[in-house]
Length: 262
Image (cartoon, rainbow, N blue to C red; front, side, top):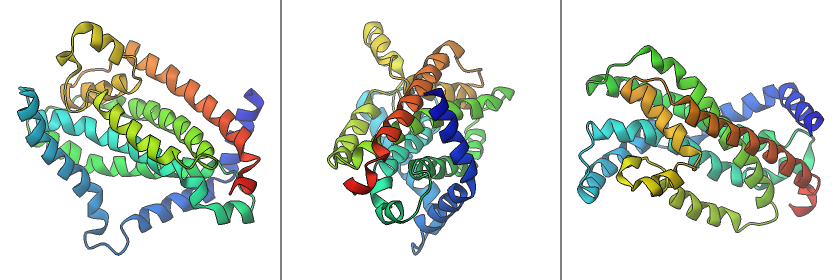
């Protein structure tokens, strides 16, 4: 298994120019022909933020201080996560002609989707930092931990992306199942509310969701100016590493029949 992982990483490195080209192409074509173009990178999360900021404090009687920023710093990484899974699930099938015609490490297809959405998240920080400062949040040196938290989320998303993209080639209902699961997952992650609203026993169970320490980590370094909870993040990192290893194994096993199944 170790040899397989090393070989995969080496292949990705060898084809890094192809990966960069696909990501660049996806970024350029995502909003091509639309009136607002690249601005949709900012408009979509801002619209969601506006709706959630109005609806959820009313429904939940939420008195969270600076609720729009409490929500915003969690919503953007969640969008990165879910759009990565949704896009990566169909990535191999969507590039069936390419898969059948030339050789390249197929793992680049789901990887490119996750990378594209990572870049979109980074672009989103262009409005996150000014918004935090505008609402009176003081940024501290702990914001330097942001890349670490983002990397853990990236690894976790990549692992799931590999599994889903490989299985979707055979099981086309998976796309619809994932849409439902991510919707449920959203409400099991403290994005629109703090985990403290739950009874302690329920909060403990929800805490096993690996996205909880990741989302809390984003809030810690961006909103509260604190260092992340490393004990909790270590759990998410272990889950992320296990997931990406399983992802490579599942992808390797299914990749052999991609051409036939497509």
